[in-house]
Image (cartoon, rainbow, N blue to C red):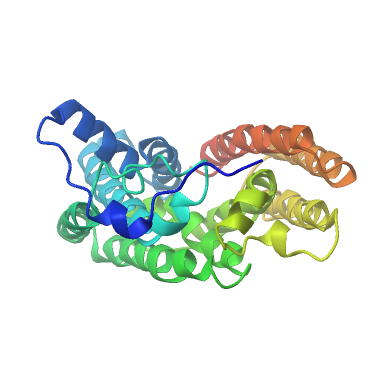
Length: 307
């Protein structure tokens, strides 16, 4: 099958956007650059971390400032990421219609908007939340943009590096509420960190051919033989099941949480085993959808148990 025609990246950067482009179209493009749907999920986990950290509805202004500051820096991360990946995005059907590779937003515009969002978000957190949250959030951006994004072109270890900033949102919420870190914050980090591997491995397996064609070193394409992707996912799912029961062992959570976390973890593990036994688009999608249900169920249960 012949690949679809690809416009030279250098040409994309010199495209002049028509003056007739409507403000609604432009706004839609910038919303897409910010990856709004992912940001909403990120901010939901920030709220959960905030509640576990001792925050409540009485701290509404603090929570609002936290969400706005973290949300702006998350948007900046997405914009910088797409600027860096504009050439590889052109090579993959799933990403070549993004605003920058499609020529609807110029790279310098995304950089300017991302810089503005990042600066405003940082100072909002520093001035109206606390310096700890501001520094942690900025560090998350730096790790995502400066380490994870470029490393994707050189090493499959990028998956592990990328899981660190991916696990930070509930920690940021905890820090915003308490101005400190504790075992609860580290436990939330561990849950998010381990959860990402089966979730991301399912995505990477589905798009492994596109990643390889774009020259990205994502894990499934770098493994020497079949079924290793599923076996790795099983290892992380088992670790996640054990770690998720940590608060029960430390007597910080009761039997209700234990039942929810244990049952959810077993279901998640079951789908990883199914994927490992038969690596296919069907089982990969099943695992992906299961992961999207697992995380909110366990985090909500943990929030109620640990608040």
